[in-house]
Length: 265
Figure 1: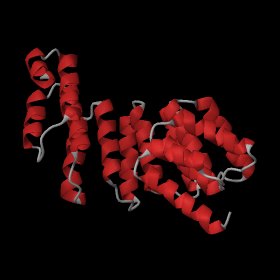
Figure 2: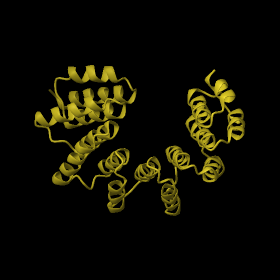
Figure 3: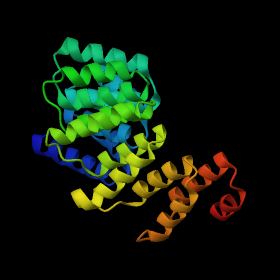
């Protein structure tokens, strides 16, 4: 098979993945007469990022059985699957294999490991990895802040966020979503208000529905329903399911029956 043909097949496979057409991706992959390391990496990463972690892990193992040595990006895809599945044991095994194969300096694999350790609740390991990385990017910062915020270390998460800003690393939409979540889990209303306002005022980032939902969740957790309602009414778009779910959850927690019925409707 000419090399150009395999390049074309891989390009089409990537197109299906980027479009989120996972069924077509899997069918097309099965039809491919030849596969390269890029082929395997695209399908494994695509499945992992779209919620098909078990299938991604099966393909990762199949790739190795067929004698194709994974690159760091393939490892990152497999580790992402472990994060989604909460498979800490497998994630640790992949980490050990990364080191043995000399891929432990890979930024993409390290970022996936931070996310995996964070989601599995091993925040200390995530932090150790973060501190020893030779280079960190915005994904690294986001992953570590998320790990802290997810497990009740909201104050530490905010501290890391402030350190990120001091090191001239600009936050993006994902960063603000993560820091608002950290504030919500830790009940840090004052800080949450500040970061929500600074999105637009300091960084020119317009909050989307997910950001509003996180802020409303924070307010409702603390019983600030009037402020939450005012925020919903000020939104530049019609509230969707995430907004009403956040409001409803707060009403359930604080026994606000009347507002809860409105949110449910």
